[in-house]
Length: 142
Image (cartoon, rainbow, N blue to C red; front, side, top):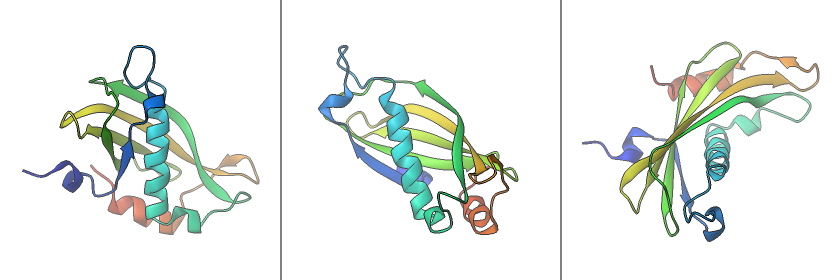
């Protein structure tokens, strides 16, 4: 049987901080968007996206986020967030997140972000560059 990290070759480990919890003593729902952001930036850095963009050029923006909470997470814990790519189009793609709790040895949360390439100079959508497209294809799931 494959391990979680084998199934998610690009993944990020995140240590749950005490401050991530809310009054109900579990990680607050909005914190998962920060976990997804950390994993997304790590993923994009690992495929060298940041070497090809500038603040005045074309870069990724999030058009939609969603989260599905399956099990509560509490401190202390370490989470591994796996990232996969689906719905690859000429100007957009979906990043899927799967959160695995080391303490629970289970998937606790899933989610997705729709990412659109955006030209910061023109204020319009832009096509995905060839180097980025190749990198995304290599991590895409059908």
